[in-house]
Length: 371
Image 1 (cartoon, rainbow, N blue to C red):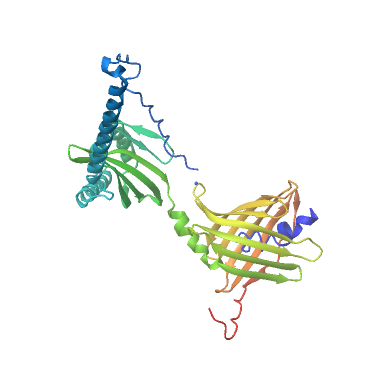
Image 2 (image 1 turned 135 degrees about the horizontal axis):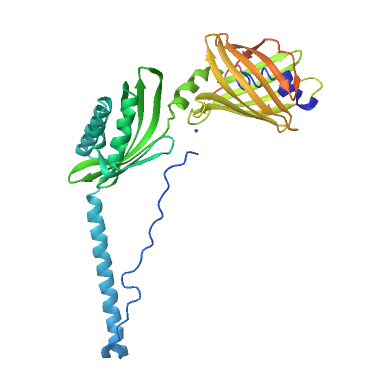
């Protein structure tokens, strides 16, 4: 236990707290592509004509056949090129206008709580898959389900933001966007990313498939609240030295961290961590792993006084550990960190002292240094 003490107890404040603390969605099942079957499979082969038995005639016929095949291939290529000219790589202005008008009608029918008008915007055999994966099939069922929903949620309002439109074929368009349902009696908005497929029938676009999925809005917005962590940090005291670096992941939906812990009488420990949005818990979460084989995870909660991170983890030998850490920003270059309710196995540890962590200053530029 002593070998893991710097990470899990001595510096559970700095590592599991600010200096280290601080939803695979299964898509719809893809149907198997049907196997192509030749139309003439198994058909009886005709007997060769008399002239086909003549080697000279056969040689001439073979040459003619090759020429005919080339001409047919060229003709088919021309047909494909002609068809591709009629297929737009982008949605036309008229089709986009029609789709956006349809989306406005969806919002209006939903906000008027008109289940019949809402369902009429879907095809007779349309399918909706909600965020829990429940499937609603058929226009009549859609009307029934949303009629019940509107009765139970008389103040529900829908707002749709279209992110992209892309043609799949000349008569199919794929749409991606974000939907937000608000309810005056409920302070929490229901936000989801969605996918819709439209089909053009008799010059009219209609929805044939719609699917909701967990929104990435929290990942993009909530993680910004921890942007102050980005950079290099140092915690140095008589107990030891902790150095931590935070940086953005490429998509800026996660903060990535690396740390090292140095304490007198203990082997050096280092590790990595990732902070991001947990769509199931609807909170920011830290995942961390140390070089000894231990790991931990914790959820973040924000208050007026700063952040609270409840950490639980397992040491390399399987011993459980936990702590509640408090983190507060003191200006741009200082953080205070305090760890309480610390346990290792069944043993309760004393609360840690409040620590002040400072941002490591950038290296001074060398005079005369050129880029």
